[in-house]
Length: 90
Image (cartoon, rainbow, N blue to C red; front, side, top):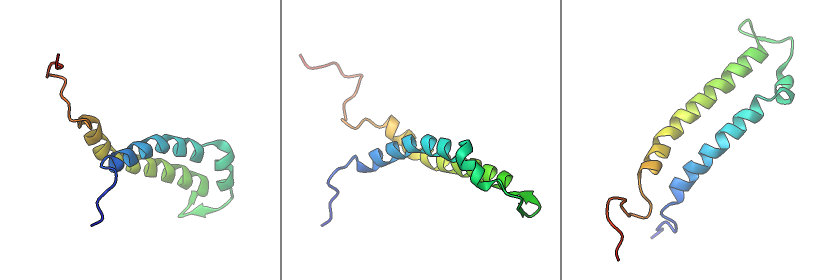
């Protein structure tokens, strides 16, 4: 009984996430935000700043990989169900 109101909602969500990912990555890797993690602490003998940088980098790669499949499908599917090979009706 709960039919989706917008059939393209899932596609748009992945498109929006694909737009937000680089912005979030830029924010997380900006020097003012990174300075929060500049301490004399170590995690398993590795400085916290290095652990933070590589964790953010790895997380961005994983999220991009996770988004790649649905974004590729959204780019290849034609939401209007029209084909470029058919000539327009006169």
